[in-house]
Image (cartoon, rainbow, N blue to C red; front, side):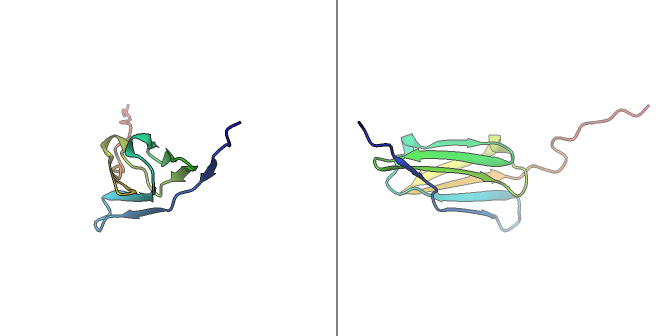
Length: 100
């Protein structure tokens, strides 16, 4: 019977750029193939699953402020996944209320 892989949390760093317009996420995934990384993002969190031969990297992390996941850009190079995602403008989801 095959042995079940252990799940571990990868080393993850979240920070803003110098003008606080975007969130930068860096995840260290040594030994993972780019095509095996599964990344999902909501406006308030992200989920990552990245298997390698001996273990699975798994993490779900909330954000400090809402982001626009549809504008996220991710790049994987030499074991480092770097994701840039802009913050939502405070009025992006605002609903116009008609005044009677």
